Image (cartoon, rainbow over all chains, first blue to last red; front, side, top):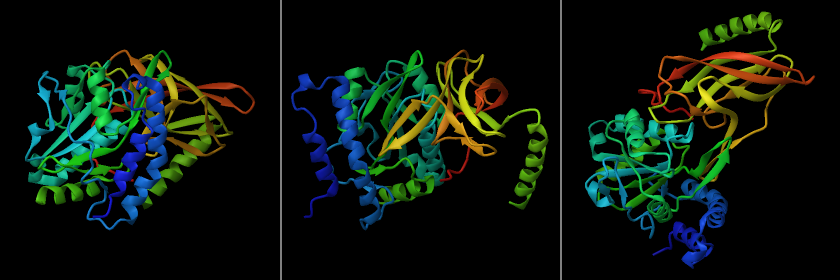
Length: 221
Length: 152
């Protein structure tokens, strides 16, 4: 079996990360990761364009990452991927004070729900906050509901958030601005099939129609 | 499209007559709506400076901090930064829109409700160094546009 290109990317990401947890503190590690991901991103784009694939998104089937998460929903209930078995799952990491990419990604997800028609009920959209200090459970609930009543916001404490992001190779960094801060973060959406396997990394530029077509394939399998 | 072109011509004619009084015009200003507790959002608009200049600052009674921000994708990572100014080439309509520049409104004093209008002041510095304040009435659009097709 040919080695999947994403696996070699994964190795580069892993090798650039200090293995000693004590060294894994804050900004240095995140910057290193961000730099690595930025450097790899053109490669990710290339895979999507040149590989013969049924999907518009980057096919990451078989990846040894993005396997699960352990976070809480706005009512405080612990959630893992197993809760959504039988449905396709679309996960996006973001924050509610985000003026641009997060509403764009969630608007696209809502449009995908609409385009899927009856199959929309077999899709669960999850929004994981990378800003749990400001995104309270109540705020997460009202924010996701503004896009679609079935969207679910997920949150954890700082460590749980970091663990979930690490598992999905999502990078995020606080950037001070004015008297406040904003967040840089990975703007990919991840799609799971109804069996709970990570299948696709959807780029921010993908259209709702492209995402819908990809999810129709996942839901038909 | 024809109708739109005609509108643009009319708009351009109106703009030409208005330009004698104002160096900078702002069109289609809108703010993304927010839900309670959400303390930040973005304003978008099309800004045209007749003789050229730079958008250097913004303020609004609705927000404690207002900055000019640029959003850029570096690979698949979204980065957002305050910029010292946004160039406005003479006579060129510069779009502040999702995926590029926006006026970042932080420390919101109340939720931005769809349909409301919010005053925002844009400060444009001309080539001669003189500053002009442009009062904008930005319309608040729903946080989640209903059934709006995604265009790229």
